[in-house]
Amino acid sequence: MTDDTPLRASDADRDRVAAVLGEALASGRLTSVEHADRLDAAYTARTVGELVPLTRDLPDVTVSHVPAAVERQTIDSTFSKVIRKGRWVASRHTRLSARFGALIVDLSQAVLPGREITIEADARFAKLIVRVPDDARVIDEGGSMFGKRDVTGGSEGDGPLIRIVGRSMFAKVVVSRGVSDWNLA
Image 1 (cartoon, helix red, strand yellow):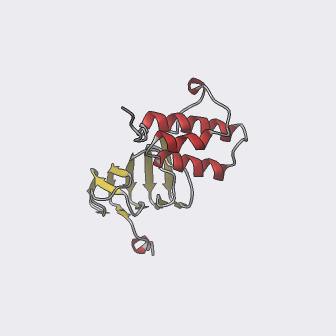
Image 2 (cartoon, helix red, strand yellow; image 1 turned 90 degrees about the vertical axis):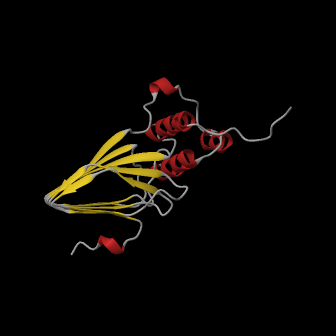
Image 3 (cartoon, rainbow, N blue to C red; image 1 turned 30 degrees about the vertical axis):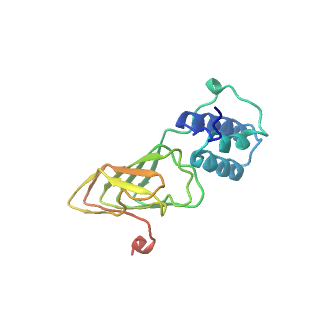
């Protein structure tokens, strides 16, 4: 009996491809734009067959020598306004920290490593605004004290799951799909 159904890719399969792509970027075989494009394709691939062309023109790399995709990163704004937007590589766990300022993070064009990421939104006396992709599923597990927390999303959609955790005090935290809520005046 033969089965022509393509083999589904696992997170481990995607991480192996990400490791090869990371080594290719570090060694100068890929530009940062090529790396971001291929990494995005790797983490959105549903089958192993979709992963194969992403590394076909790159040397094989022993995974033990290559760090996996960045698991954690922090974006910080203290007494300032920081904006992260455009094409950038997020991590599986991204900590957003805003103190006495504003932090704006746009995930709509970011490369998201995997089907689920966690955003730790930590704001004190600040504004923290996150824009998520249109097809993202958003789950809010955070809290607020003496502030405003407006997380729109829901569990419908077939995009990545974005889990919002963390606490805010005397702060405004907005997570949305549109840019209309981004007024910081």
